Amino acid sequence: MSRILIVEDEAHLADGLRFNLEAEGHAVDIESDGQKALDRLLADRDAYDAVVLDVMLPGKNGFTVVKELRGAGHYVPVLMLTARSRPADVLQGFEAGADDYLPKPFELQILLARLRGLLRRRQWMLQNQHEHEQLTFAGKTLDLEALELHVGDKAYQLTQMECDLLQYLVRNVGRPVSRKAILEDVWDLQEDTDTRAIDNFIVRLRRYLETDPTKPKHLLTIRGVGYKFVE
Ligand code: CA
Image (tube, rainbow, N blue to C red):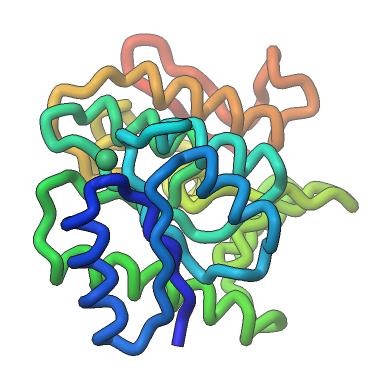
């Protein structure tokens, strides 16, 4: 059984989700206000195994909630509900620190499957502390299950999306990858999306990876193309 917090102010939607998640054997709470959801999550950090977070909320919107949550070092998996008509929302959600997203209106079965994915990942993380899949490059180790990047004796906690992007770039070592390829392959976005969000992600990853983030030696910008990872 997992404990799930649904943050959604549309009562019929929240109740429908609760009904179905409880039918799957989970314990579910509902919060309709962004600020209250944030307070609740920060008050007891182990209270929930996953959060389903809507963007449009009273009190504080979903982007701000997840951003402040991550800012406080709280890494509970967050599935964000975004507006289908606004792919930019998806990127904003990832930038803020969401782990996965689902555009509204969504199929219930898809939501349940995505949530199962997040919960399974968390279970692995909690149970197999010593058998994590790791990626080593340039003297750094990326732990793909704990979502941690180890640089020397420092460990950085990455969001799922930061981890996925870094993994993608590292697996394509030496090869330039376009922003479009990143959108499609990493985030499954095919729309014409504002790609500046990717640049913001790269800026963040450089802060973890580069000795001098203003003079990157690993995460290179390839003008007119995109990015390239070199060891
Ligand atoms: Ca809402």
